[in-house]
Length: 311
Image (tube, helix red, strand yellow):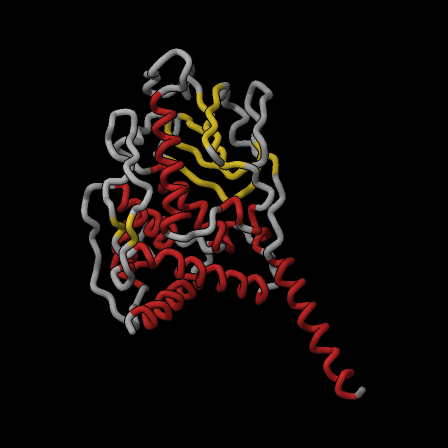
């Protein structure tokens, strides 16, 4: 009897910890978005988990509205959807990554909403689950959000795949340091571009500090790290745009086996930090997600994996 009583606190403690861990990873609420309130995007095209919202008139009009027939969406929309679908399948099937919509934090998202607008840049991705209402009163289901420029030509620009990968990063971890976010997403573009990637020689322990101020150039760092991992073949077969150009410009992604263990390790670090600060992932502010000390957290993960991969 004494032995049984002594064991009880351990059982309670374990159950309590499991419940606490689930609370820290509880899904984000579906908020009311305001960024589309001055836009009207009456046309939409759905392909898999993606719903593309666009217009052919006004300031947000597609720069190219060429159609195969009057009954089909513009070729530009079909090509954006084709790149997104191909990237999604590649990330999940070949790289073995967990799709954003299956991540606990994004459980309330029903789709990935892609808004094609008059943007200054090529694209943006957001980590809040939201439903948007347009100027004409039409609204969207709760979803994750990507914005793309109405001038973007996906047949020579991998921005859709780049922005989609940001949603993967947001689903795995709370870190928003640009050398990691933009650098790794730029590295992920490699398989969609004909150019060979640039990298650096890397061995453990690596000093990451010089990269903390970088953004897209961080791709050089991540390719150097990836060189310690095996290449991943593209198994989806030939997929082409409307102009017959291939979506994938390489048949093998050099060092692609690095993506899954890195994101998994960063996810574990995010869980640890939410428990340390007693702050669920859904409650981290933009400032808190950008805190400088997390650069060192990311670097420690890199060195731990690098030590293992180099053996």
